[in-house]
Amino acid sequence: MAKTTVALKKKSVKKEMAPIKKKEVAKSSKQSIAKGKNEKVSEAKSKFAKSVAKKPLVKTKTAKKKAISKTVGTVKKSQAVKTKNEVAAKSSLKSKKIVAKKSAPAVKKAILKAPISNKLKAKPAEKKGLKPITPKATKAIKEVKIKASKTTIEVPAPIVVKQIPDKKPRIKNVLISQAYPENGKSPFIDIGVKWKLKVDFRSFIQVEGLTAKEFRRLRINVPDYTAIIFNSRNAIHYFFKLCEEMRVKLSPDMKYFCTSEAIALYLQKYIHYRKRKVFYEYANKTLFEILNKHKDNEKFLYPCSKDRKDDIPNFLSSKKFNYSEAFIYQTVPSDLSDLKSIKYDVIIFFSPVGIKSLMYNYPDFKQEDRRIGAFGQVTHDAVKATFRLDIVAPSPVAHSMAQALENYLKESNGKA
Figure 1 (cartoon, rainbow, N blue to C red):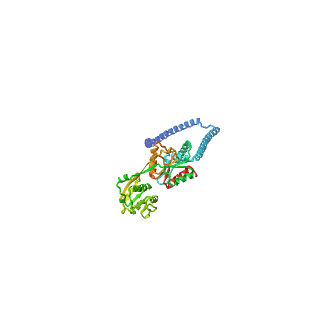
Figure 2 (cartoon, rainbow, N blue to C red):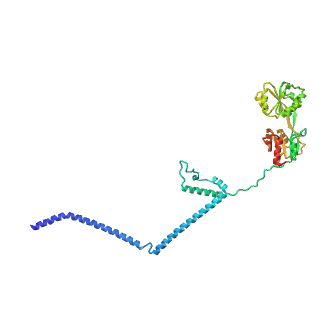
Figure 3 (spheres, one colour):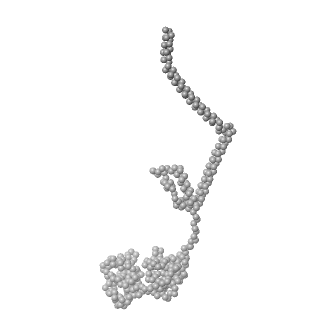
C-alpha cells in the first residue's frame, strides 16, 4: 500500500511539474537563440576590426607628423594663392580708378550712354515698398561700372580739325544805289573819309511820272477833295507837277497828312507851310490815329506809286474812309551801261526795284565775297530771295543805313 501511494504521489508531482518544465525549456531555447545571434554579431565585428587593423592609416608617429605637415603645407599654399589674387584685384581696381580720374568727363559720358542692368536702375532701399539691396547686388553693380569704365577707356581720341577764324574780309570800296546828293553832303561821304574808303553813288532806279493826258484818264478831279495823304517826296513832286500842267489851283483850306516830319517839311517848296493844315506822325500819335479823327469831315486823295505798300489803303478801306487812290508815278530800272563792272566790296539798296535793276542790267551777276546791305523789310525780302543779306537796317543797333554800315566796318576793318 505504501508503494502505491508513493507512486501516485510521484505521478501527481510530475503532472504538476510538466507545465513548469515546458516554460523553462522555452526560455532556455530563446536564450540559446539570442546567444547565437550575439555570437554572430560579435564575430562580424571582430572580423571588421581585424580587416581595419590590417590596413592602418598611420603606423608610426613619424608618419603622422609627415601627414600633418603635408596638409598644413597645402592649406598655406591655397591661402597664399588667395592673397595674391586679392592683391592683384585691388591693384587693378586702383589702376582703373586712376585712369578713370584722368578721363573723368569721357568716363561719365560713356557711363551714361552704356547699357545699365535693371539692378542699377532700381531705386534706393530707403523708399517704401522696396527691398534692401543685397551684397550680391552690390557686387553686380560694381562689375557693371568696371565694364562701363573699360568701354570708355577704349574710345578713340577725337579728330582735331583746324578751324578757320570767323574774320570778315576788309572793305575798300562801297557803291550806294542812290543819286549823288545835290548839296554834296551825305553821311556815306563822311564814312568814306573816316575809314579811307572809295564811296560811289549811282541811282539804280529812275522815276517816271504820269503826263497830264494820262492822269485825266483816271477821271479824278483834285478840287473835289479836302485832304491829301503823302507817303514820299516823289509823290509830292509829281502831284504838284501834274497840278501845274493841268492848271489846277488847290484850296488854301486843303489839309495834308504825311507819314513823317521830313516829308511834311518838303511841302514848303510848293505851299505856304502852316501847322494847322499839315499833319504828320510824332512820338505820341501815329498817322492812323490822326487820320481817324478827321474821318467824318474829309474826303481823302492818296497819290502814290504803283509799287506802294498796302498798309495805308488797307487801313482806309477797313475803317470805311471816303477816299480815292491815284497812281501818279512809277519806278523803273535805270540803264547801268556806264558802269563797267560791279566789282565793289559793298552794295547798298533802298528798294526792291534797285535789286531788279541789278539783275536786269547784269543777269550773270554773282555775289561771291561781296556784301549786300538793304534798308526796309520789303527790300530785305527782295535781297533774301536771290542773295545773301549782310548789312541790315533799320535794326535795334542801327536806325539808319549809314550807322549799320559803320558798325559792319568795325568788325571787318577794325579801328578807323
